[in-house]
Length: 168
Ligand SMILES: [Fe+2]
Image 1 (cartoon, protein in one colour):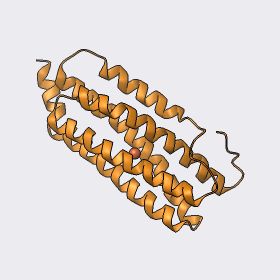
Image 2 (cartoon, rainbow, N blue to C red):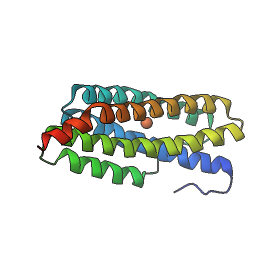
Image 3 (spheres, protein in one colour):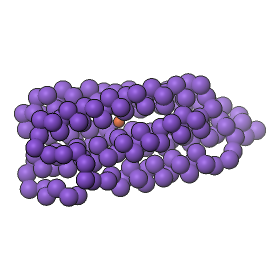
């Protein structure tokens, strides 16, 4: 990371930059996830998360406006890896239902990464008394959690079973 971690505010900024990069990387791959999905509900979930992700980037922008830092200058390597795995699934041939199950798994890995970072960021904002940032991060964290549980519902109530039947 380019920012030195010599205070909690610096850790906050460093992680915020990480998410800024991560969200942009995700925004780039979401249209491809949408296209690769077969289930209409899964397509809808990816489309909805595209719009949410744009809003989440705007929230990070507005947090940076209150700080003396710019959002750029860092690339999230973890998201690079997660996106690479998602692209491997997108490019694979196979039963559409099984592919949907794998796409959900890749997307949930991404969501969990985001939830972990936003959870830490929100906790830092609380202790640093950054009220506006706290509220914005809380909103984003809630969105990420509900995106994740929507994917769990889709997998466990429909898609995993269809994927299992498709192989027979
Ligand atoms: Fe996000």
